[in-house]
Length: 201
Length: 201
Image 1 (spheres, rainbow over the protein chains, first blue to last red):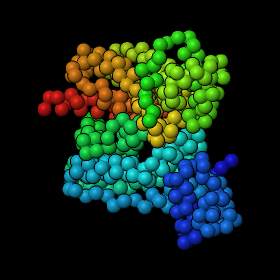
Image 2 (spheres, rainbow over the protein chains, first blue to last red; image 1 turned 180 degrees about the vertical axis):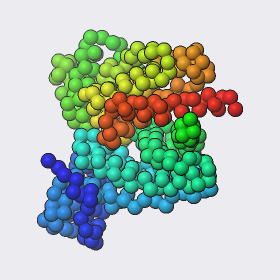
Image 3 (tube, one colour; image 1 turned 135 degrees about the vertical axis):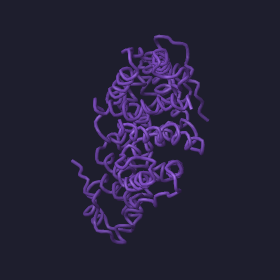
């Protein structure tokens, strides 16, 4: 039985960061299934004992490698309007989805579909850790009177990530400016403003 | 260079169907990367020459196996209201996503992320082939005055599939009745009705 101890993470030392960095590189180069703990140890010039003490299972290490790479939330955009902030946010998500880091996430998805520890890690890292950014955008829009106070930032998460990720995974079309405008004007704004309408009914 | 000749498909014979059936079983049991043309030939009791003539590349065969399995569009729900039809549709999608067939699609996603022929096949099979169902639901709603004529069925596709698939892949929560109600009331109806509002402005 695998556990997600790595999700909390061991104490952050330079040694641990080097191991996480090596693990992320391996995920990028060969994918989760082909990543071996021994190869990570060799690349990070760490002893296997060090690695297995901190991360008893490969899933734990993958969790922490993702947290190390994606853990820091980006600065929320602050353009002065909800639409401007959402466009900036979707554009950032599209750029990430097309980057080498995005390819690592996509590659992990299939492994995660059969591995609850990994899927939890992906959920935590690429979804929940950005909740604060979305909350800030929603709260600023509420302060400007564009949305009611208490609009649920989780709805913004859920819909934004689903649309960008699916577009990327299905290669359903380019992740360009036109797509960002479509996501914001045709989906996100109607969904968030519906909250406002529902609030007043 | 791989080509998507299998997407169009060879003449449908019992022999070809048996091969597609064997290929789908292999996709289910071992996944795309581990599926070999030789093993499919053995399971279908077909000659390798027959298989390679019809499907020069593995991606072509996977395409046709999916088309064979998912190609037929389901009967559109007809509950008498747009909300009822959408709830039935999302419930069906959730059931498929949790089924063994859904697991095959999820397993293929990672391979498809690095393989344009496969991603095109997935797009065609699980997305575009259902366009008629979505069009029927939208048109019936328009005939009842619930939506304007000309509401884009592709928007229904895009948002519905993205939300259900992402929920499944990230294991972000159960694909249950509460989720179906959430998708319909919080996302799909606001998005589709926004088209109506936009139409009238």
